[in-house]
Length: 172
Image (spheres, helix red, strand yellow):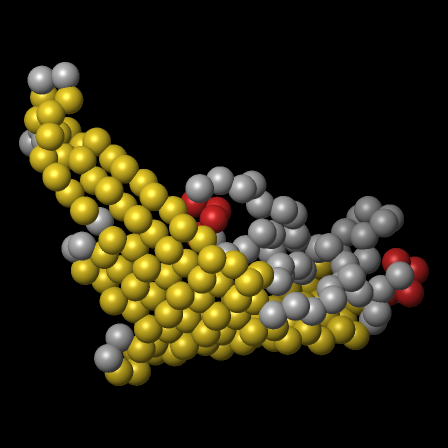
């Protein structure tokens, strides 16, 4: 069961609330059953223009687990985890006309920068229910997560720089 709520407040500031209630059960013998409640309130300020974008976000990630037969798997029955996250992201787009093999084109130069901080908390007392490591690629550098699901939230304190260029044909 998921509930997402976004409420604009003022001057491009939004209040976000993402929540999820999940029950996990598996026929596999080495997978414990569990109930997970995740609530993530946050504030974000964003500005989007034709020439670029800027986003500032702060989120509190609160997750509670009730894990069945936890002692069999070396886990705790009741686990509560609170993690803070802050993100600053900016990108710009520069364009210039050009030519490529006799055809008119537009070349873009798109620098990006992101600072991401996610606080650390030991999560070894939580089972892996819907979590796997995500593939690292250029887009993943700005994703802010290393894992799918919510069972593992990686701690980060990183500055990421990226640069993309595109050659766009000018055909209508």
